[in-house]
Length: 198
Image (tube, rainbow, N blue to C red):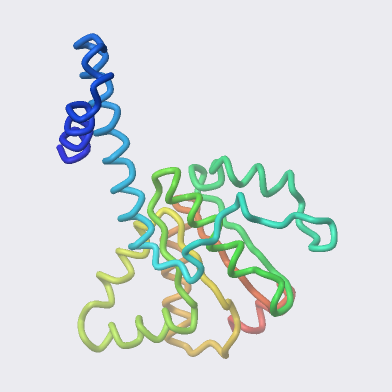
């Protein structure tokens, strides 16, 4: 009970806390312990998410009209219902408009809401899965990806898709469909995805 112990030491060092009723002092200790645990859990979730932009957060998002972002849509996404419903999100646009930053900010918000998240560049993830086929961890890796509540797939369709990558991508998306949220960032317009996937 680290949080409670630290709060107790603070109470002892502050003469004003001795004027509080016993119940109030215990309530403060319990609140400090709960806050400490929440903070540790958030730190753990953010570390496991491996976000490219770890400091990205929706509160710092610039929604000026020139950027073409709908402030109401962003506000709606901040509530996290898309995560609860397992809905996918697509962030598309040209290079340099902040797709990855926005995806990381949404994943960071998911962690703050208590959900697991993982950021992965799709080309690197598919290569890791190809290697996992050889070392016997492929199935375990796919199962782990299926359990993550918010999976960020960055740089969608950036490189040609190999046959093994197509199979793995199908498994990933099928395992997540209507169960867990998937966030995709892409430069390739959606009408060209069918050709890319083959």
